[in-house]
Image (cartoon, rainbow, N blue to C red; front, side, top):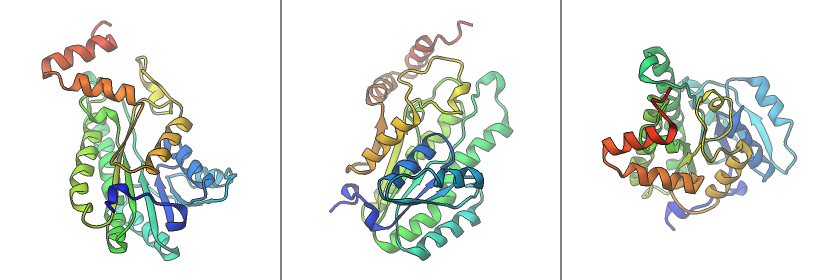
Length: 262
């Protein structure tokens, strides 16, 4: 069986979700636990994770593992803690931040923070996760990127860059993992109603709730394949526009969002 066809179940081991205290990560952690998973949940706020653990109504449970994904030693320690209890079957590396950034307010400190969390945080988690799963010869790791990584989008000068990097990283790793018994997926959501996206000054097409996004992610994790993308219609529109030559692409996106008219 190809690793891309492998679907992990709660009986196969534990799940680990980062960025679990808010938005998509919170909704996903709760949904997995309610479906029977033992979910180790990581975020910076221990209080938020404790509160989340108390909301489980299904047959699984949430075990808080507070920490910052930019701390590589802590992430390695968390994976060691999880695997002391049994196999690590599923990891969803979801932690990320978004700060709108245009040319007029481009600033290196803010850019570095997004790079450190969105890219560096994922690599800090991937290191121990891949070592563990390759050693186990089984497991499923999923990385939350974004359709904003398909091509550059307005207000997302750095965010788009980090998500494009994650997509490319997952594609490259898949070429090796297919021979090692480990499945890797990239999760590419569209606009999701979270604290991060609330700062956007433009109308967000196909906006969905975190609960709906979590439902679609779980459905994707339970199906064979590499990319979990939603809403599909929005992704198809972006992919089609993305095929345009650079000048036409930039003009089309600006026109769609009314860019440069204010």
